Image (cartoon, rainbow, N blue to C red; front, side, top):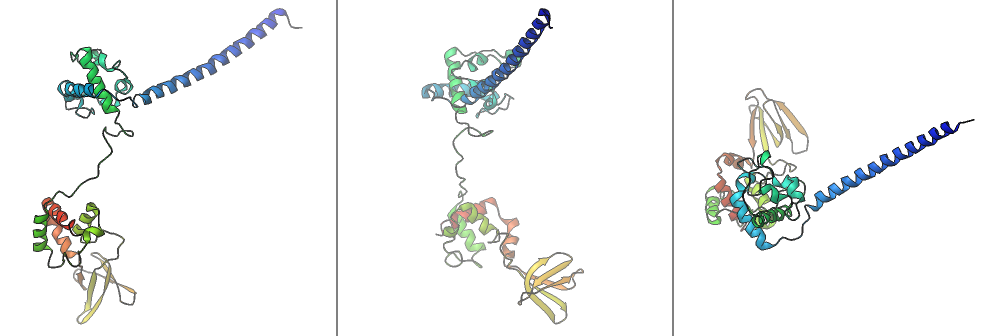
Length: 287
């Protein structure tokens, strides 16, 4: 028969277990809630009400004078080694200047951030400007600003491009012939430029237009569509679809490749950026 003392120990132990469990799971819940609150605060730091435009303009001017050299024009760090404010916890969570203003006024001098010497109103304007920039942040690591604007590569002189075309290209191409409506076929200037620079050969999946003559003996020449060529072997496809390969040893057999894109390849080392821009500016007018 259990004594009163032993029953007290059992009951006491039970209460300790219950209390421990309550504290443990309660602690988990509290920690979880704290984590969620922390994440919520972090996220809400990037979703901000509109700032006073006049205050932002004033703050931007002050930022340019006092802060830009260290933190950069885009807040991502400047030439003098200041930290990236777009990743600053203080900047991300600031709501009304409560985080940023003390720092501007010397709260982190021990960490190397000097006292800028601005009063509350001016420091608050700088904080408003920083918040306005952070409010434009997109995805993780994206710089602030609007969505990326389409790249405009049509920056050349169309008249010079037409003159270049007449001098270097017109012997094989015509603006009213094979290149008629080329800008309609390739409405994206980037694709159009890639097409003409590569001579229409920028599609790796397109079949080769090159042909080859292989002279295996005097008077015995075999011709066909070029399939493969290197220093050791040449393979061609005959008119009936069959393929033949020949081992190369120096200049034997004699191999002559006819590549309609060769002129474009030969021109590649001679193009200047201005030539490319000018010809592209001319070709986009051929619609």
